[in-house]
Image (tube, rainbow, N blue to C red; front, side, top):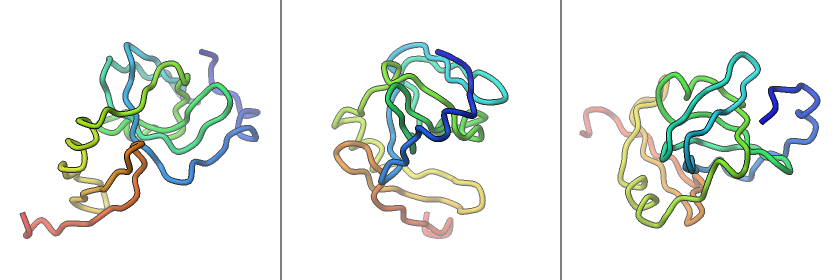
Length: 121
């Protein structure tokens, strides 16, 4: 995988909805400041693509703060139906938003985000 290139900005297409995908093996994404290593089976959130790559961020931790990471299309896969069911049941604590629960389409696209007050827990 090549490194970050500003010229790639023009070739990126925004996805209609951000989507969750899963790493297929040990994967390294490129970011303009650093490379990020992922283990097999880690969730990422994708929001742009070009012919050969997806662009997004990790779903948790430090990796989730580095937006516009470049992942080769071969390094990610669609979620299985069981993974989708499990994700639709989870709640996430998003900074500046609070606790959220998202609804995903059968292809992993985020189609709805519902905010939950911590007192509802």
